[in-house]
Length: 125
Image (cartoon, rainbow, N blue to C red; front, side, top):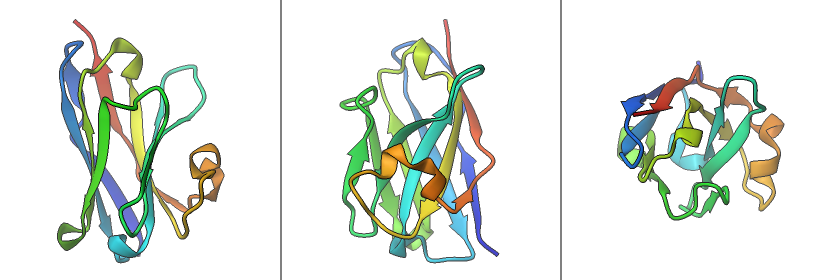
């Protein structure tokens, strides 16, 4: 059974850091693209970043230079290191699986077939 479980969210002050984890089971994470998305209350879901099976990465403009996506295939886990956090980064963060890789993936969340339940990130003083 394919499962994705996010963890690592919490409350952090502006300028702080958090590292989110996305643990996969039921499939080999290293053979797939994994994306991170977020959704704030009252707002549409927004793409954050994704990483391909060979390590290629993409980032939304809003997080470039602040967030870093990485993977540990031995642990079947993808990470999202978030630095210089801002209040506008507050959202529920989700990871999801995609079977392929294309330049447009961040704009097509509906192509991701399995999703985790999310982890809350709150940036506030």
